[in-house]
Image (cartoon, rainbow, N blue to C red):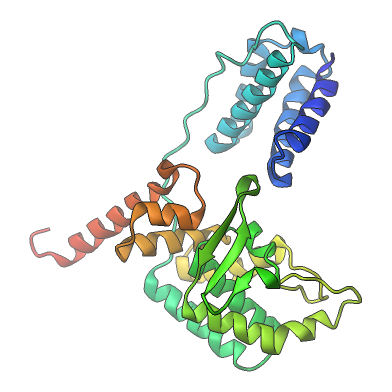
Length: 300
């Protein structure tokens, strides 16, 4: 079987058997398409370790981030492991493919005071009654108040909310469902959006939608709109040129740990499969503690 045909079969396997999320399948397809630029449409059995190493070397020369290289190496191992199990190839050439180590960079987070001022400003804008401002305030309060991913936020339906208990049901990575808590300010912002804003935007579309958050044309809001909002309001607070919704997730996790939250509780809230993924935020909290000590202690 040729490489391109094998990739098509593998993608079908990911969708129909492993039932991975569309975003994960797109990532696999993209990485394997990039590998296809090196192996072209060779017979799958002719693809060897040197081809795979050359592929990663070219990506390094191109300036791809270490995290991207690590993801692509993992995609290749998953693909060739599947091909070997399916008896499409006699041996797996990716077994000795080294994974580039990810750079250990700490996530950038906003300060608690900075977030308080940002959300107070958004609340005052929302009080004017403009439906977009009401929606934007609800978006920011939910992202920061729950630490959810932007894809999870955009997928929320009205029926997923429980304003009385202040929880929301979201669909995370790998189509794993979890219930996430949020605070009273987020509940107030979402309640105001539902009462005063959502119906205004919903009326702009001929088709009804169960989505909680709507775009200006009345359809379910998309990630790009959320990215644009967060980039506009959060970049001045963090002091970074480019910032996205994940910075609010980082900030929420760090502030939870700063406030004394248990690491496993934060893992559950964020929906991390591994506790090791959550532990990065303990390092962020430690760094902030050291900075405070050095600024405040006379013997520092």
